[in-house]
Length: 134
Image (cartoon, rainbow, N blue to C red; front, side):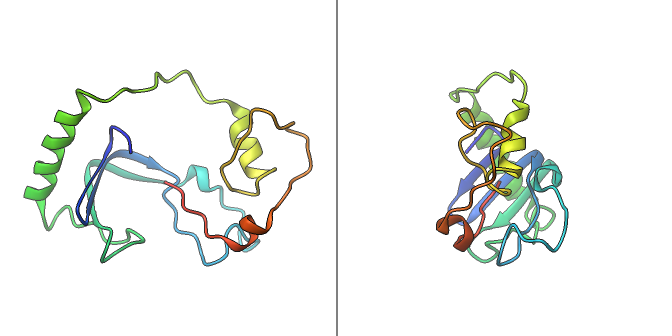
């Protein structure tokens, strides 16, 4: 995943601030609100622990119940970070978010070859699929 996440068996550890941390309804995006999914965050600074099999929507943070598991997974993640390649942060291309919200109607998708002023397009797949964003 990335340098702030580790999955082992049924458990998923997240560290730091996680963006796009909202829960979507069965149809998303919809017109029930004007919430910007990119701005929703969860603070997992000291670690959030989820059982992704028992709690696939990650609503129940188990970190306070299993601190020893959190510490073991943090240690393993630290070891793995030594061998991970990390993309340097060169800033965010503002067109990426604009096109995801406008052209793709809240979905992430290709943005480099799309004109920011182009009319939004929704495919059958997008209308009938759930959005998985992390």
